[in-house]
Length: 219
Image (cartoon, rainbow, N blue to C red; front, side):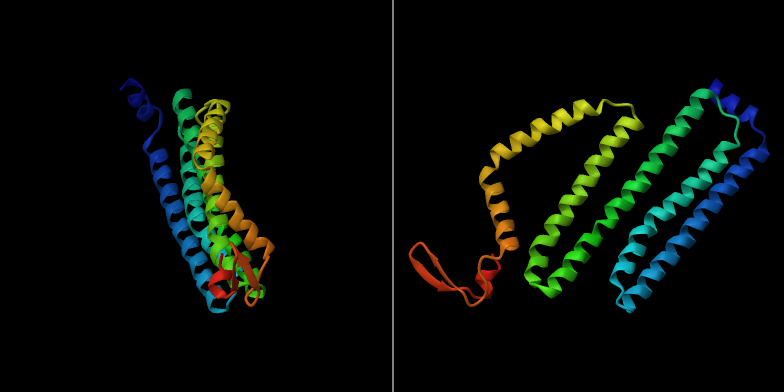
C-alpha cells in the first residue's frame, strides 16, 4: 500500500491523463491499421493476389497489438516509477514485444501453404492437400516452442538448457513409443516427394498386379 500511495503522490493528474490519452490513441491507431490491413487483404483476394493477401492478413492482429504497446510504453515512460515497478513494466513491455513478433511469425507460416499450393497447381494437386497441412502445423509448433523458450529465457530468466533437456527426453520417449507411426509417416512423405508411380502405371504388391488409379496415387 505504501508503494501504491507513493505512485500516486509522485505523479500529478496531468501525467495520468497523458497516460490515458496515449493508451486511447494506441488502441484507436491499432484498430485503424488493423482494419486497413484487412481491407487490403480483401482487395488482394478480389484481384487474386494471394501472396499480398496472406501478408496483410498475417500483419493485422500483430500490428494492432504493436500500436497499443507503443501507446502504453510512451504513456508509462513519462510516469515517475520506483525502480522495482519500472523493472516490472519493462518486463511486461518486453513480453508484449516478443508476443507480437512470434504472433506474426506464427501467422506468416500460411505463406508456406500458399507456396505449396502454387507448386501443386503445376504438378499434382494431391501433393498440396496431403503435405501442406503437415508442414504448416509443424512450422507453427516449432514457432510456438522457440517463442516460449526465448520468452522464458529473456523475460522470466529461466534456464532454457533445463527445458531443452526435458524436451529432448520427452521427444525420445515419444519417438520410441511411436516408431511404427513415424516410419509410416516418413514413408508416406518419401512417396509423395519421389513419385515412384503415377496414374496408369502397373503396380505389383504381394503377388497382386493392379493399375495405379487416382485412389492409389493418393498414397
